[in-house]
Image (cartoon, rainbow, N blue to C red; front, side, top):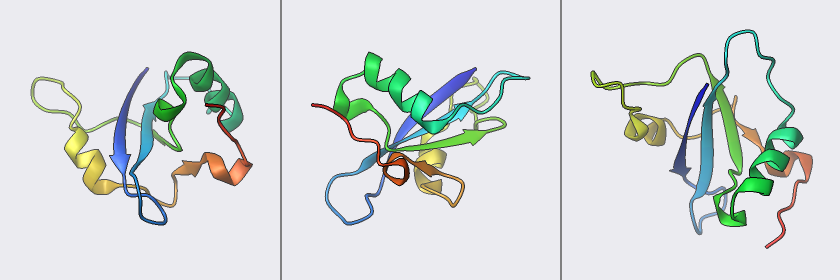
Length: 93
């Protein structure tokens, strides 16, 4: 239904990684991580494909209905964040 991408701290220093915060439409099952990565990789440059994905019931919003990305950045990764490296997914440059 909606999504936001934010930078989060990398595991071992270096450059930040992308976390995709996703809200699914009602009655839609959570997709397999590999299917979501394949979808993104086919449509985005490799450096834009998120390393982490987390599903939300709703995203924090301003009174004007804009997504509060700063809150998502501060929140960072959580134990619920899925990591594409956990499924050994590699991107082709």
